[in-house]
Length: 355
Ligand SMILES: [Fe+2]
Ligand SMILES: [Fe+2]
Image (cartoon, helix red, strand yellow):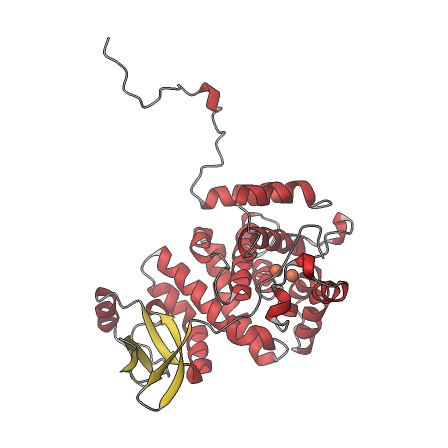
């Protein structure tokens, strides 16, 4: 394991799944989907429901498109979420992957675009992360990641809206999405990588913990101090398992395989890490420290301090670039020097007494 504690999330529950009864006799599980994931005038192929009280009521059949006017009416009525029968989950994910470009174009604000990226990624990962050894499942993730990565690389200002604390159900999916967003933003800041390489970095980051997807939640969330040596070794081997998983799916992209295999290689010499794996390792460490750990989550300052002092052998300047990127994303103009506090008038902004 790395020198910095890198506990990972577990696969829990379902993606926005809520179980409710429909009618008197049938019990179904429903997937909740944000309104932003329905593109106007498209045929979704899945039945859409609204939650009225505690009942799911059919809103639109899968063969009928939802018009722009209807979506606008839902917005005016503050209906933010629609529901789909979980048994139609595959159809829904296929619809979202195929229409991600359209959904992003239709999203009126950057915030809505971020929601589309985050929720679509989460939905696809939830259904595929534990079976990435299947070529079809991996291809669905690749298609989604391709569109998402290019969008984020073109507009890194979307990143703050994409990342979330991984403190709810589905931590591993949130963690994967966060790490990918950070890594793409960092990679696209430099001239070091061509766009196609950034796309591979985004995909590698999204599946970097594929080897953890099958680990029992009870083991993944155990405090590290309570793990036996065998359990610790088992968790530490997840990069190897992830690599084998992707190879079984026929994945051949050397950047993706390198990232999955080496994102914890922090104890060897610096040159052992490729630039791609370095970026993902940095993003992974930051998200793990600030977001993933439920019990020992740290603030960004403490996390960056730890990273600065303990990630030995790390490419010089990369942490600095990461900090600058975070500053840029929060709207701070990091290109101009910051005036020393001591030179600022202490009473700046305070009304002076009349002479
Ligand atoms: Fe990992
Ligand atoms: Fe991770």
